[in-house]
Structure formats: C-alpha cells, structure tokens
Length: 133
Ligand SMILES: [Zn+2]
Image (cartoon, rainbow, N blue to C red; front, side):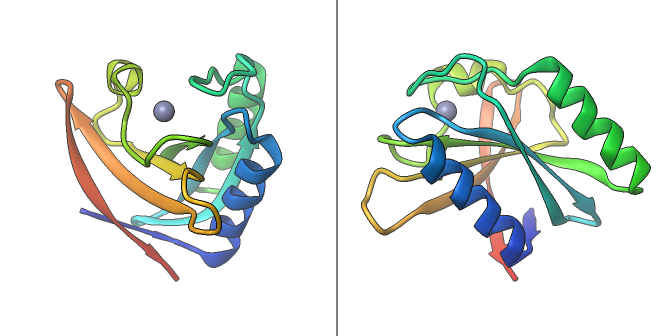
C-alpha cells in the first residue's frame, strides 16, 4: 500500500511539528484515491511530548469540512519530537481504524524530519510507502 502526499500538505505537517516541539503535534489528512491533498492541524489536548489526544470539537469540524469538500479522511498524523517514526505501544493500542494510515513525523534527528506511515490490523502494523509529490 502507498499514500501520496502533496508537498504543500507535507510542509504543513512539518510546520505543525516544529511549532509544537517539544510537545507532540497531531492532525488529520484528507484527500481521495490514496492521495492526501489537505492537512488539518489539530490541537493536542494532552499537551504532552509522549502522547496526544485530538480535541473532539476540532476533529468533528475537520471531518465536516472534508465532507463539504468531497474528500475522505485518509490518515491520522502525529509527530514524535524526540523518538523515531515508529508506532509506540500506545499508538498501536489506539490505532483501531483498519482503513486509515497512521502517519508519524519524527524530529528525532536534527534537520532530518522522517515521515513514515503504517496501517494497523489486530494490533499488527504494516508499513505504507509514502510519496511526497
Ligand atoms: Zn506516537
């Protein structure tokens, strides 16, 4: 499986991650046919460097906007300010949507942001190829 992400959406993710660091940032990615065309930056209600919770009202507003624009939610995104772009045990536990890509942008290595994607089924993760186009 692969996921395309527009450069503009990728830049928006990177901006959100850098702005929130050392806390985790979170957001949703929308588009069609396996191509992300819009990134929604959401507030991490946990204000934590190790986990995140999306504000429900912002999540609802983003999904409503996707519907209004004829797009679908393709990915759930968050940043790892200090750890690699891997799903943590908690990320795996909370990844309950089998058709959604879980994206993690790691800032662990200075000047080398690392974006990785995974799908999760029954607690097992599979890598997703990410193409920034
Ligand atoms: Zn995480």
